[in-house]
Image (cartoon, rainbow, N blue to C red):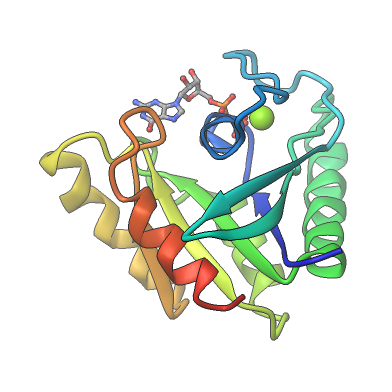
Length: 163
Ligand code: GDP
Ligand code: MG
């Protein structure tokens, strides 16, 4: 079994891009189309000599706002049930959206560690924008670029410290 980390977040924040970086085998499907139906992806990653399971919870059927909200609740509940730690991924390019707020409200209810991970912090200007995510009120906030890999080492250090 081992330690399991789930990546949750609304579509297009970069969950699968980060998941792919964590995996040696490129199993996750990454695409630009919001709302494409995808199953959950499971993988195994290693950092600091520690192995852990990773779940990419990208499976959405985004036909309507109602279904979307239901899917988000489901995704967060799966993550809380199956994971030992949760990466709550958000997007510095868009800032905090209503769906981020809705997910944050659900994630505040768990006692499991939640790592707010602001993705797409590709440059210093984005970093300044990204600090707004502290307002969500979570203890752990990390700034990463899944494309360049910057910041991901600090995030993985913090997560693997729990193992
Ligand atoms: P998901 O729906 O959350 O799984 O998001 P994807 O991983 O499919 O990525 C959505 C889009 O964001 C793709 O076009 C990615 O190339 C892009 N993306 C992912 N990470 C980054 C990043 O760190 N910086 C930038 N600029 N784009 C990113
Ligand atoms: Mg995805």
